[in-house]
Image (tube, rainbow, N blue to C red; front, side):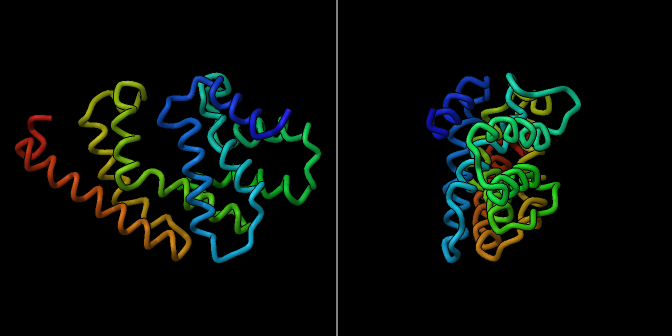
Length: 196
C-alpha cells in the first residue's frame, strides 16, 4: 500500500475530532514547507512526520497517562518498519514527532524545528480560534465557551514566545493580532464576557 493512502486511512479511521485530524495534519505539513522554503529539506520527512505527529492522541491509539507525542512516536516507529526507510530519515521523522509540542524543546533537525513551529502556529490566529471553539464540549478541558476563551487568551500570550524560526515569529505576531481583535470584539459584545 502507498504510504500516503495508509496515513490517510489511519487518521480517518482513528476517531480524531475533525479539528485535530487530517486537515490539521495537512495544514502543519504545508505551513512547515512554507516556513522553510528558503532551505532544501526532505519533503518526505515533513509529510510523514506531519501526518503522524498527533496519532497518539486519537481515540483508537491513545493510552491513558501517556504523552501523545511519545505515543505517536512509537506508533510511527512500528508503522514505518514496513517501509524500509533509511535510518537517518527515520530518525528525523521520529524526532520531529517527539518534539512537535510547544512544551518540548525544538529537535535538532531543521525538519523537526519547522514542523514544531508549524504545529504551534496552527493553534494561533483565526484557525486556532476555530479549532478551540469547535472542541468545546468535546474536550474535557473545554466544557464551555468560558474555558475556551481562557485557552485562547493563554495561547495568544504564551505560544508566540515558543516559536523558534524568524519566519514563524513574524507569522505568530500576525496571528496573535487576529486573536486579540477577536477577543476585543467578544469583550465588547458580551459586557466584558459576562454574557458568554
